[in-house]
Image 1 (spheres, helix red, strand yellow):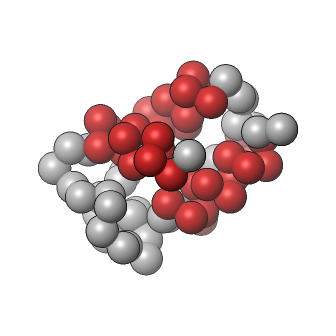
Image 2: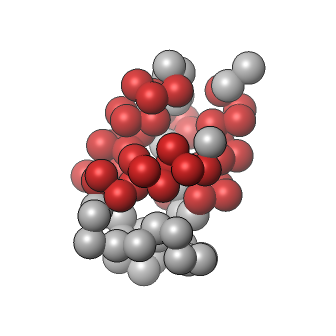
Length: 76
């Protein structure tokens, strides 16, 4: 799953290396609010889920681990 997440992130922002350990993609300037909308759409399509609006919070998208934890909530 993490490889798919990194692949999606690289499609959205190819100028950054999302394989490098980063505490917070948003604070580091790697993702902005528009990128989050694009990321949520791509995750929904890739994993055939629908992320609730209440879960679209910066803390759920700050690193690979937080995104993976969010996806695990939706993937049965």
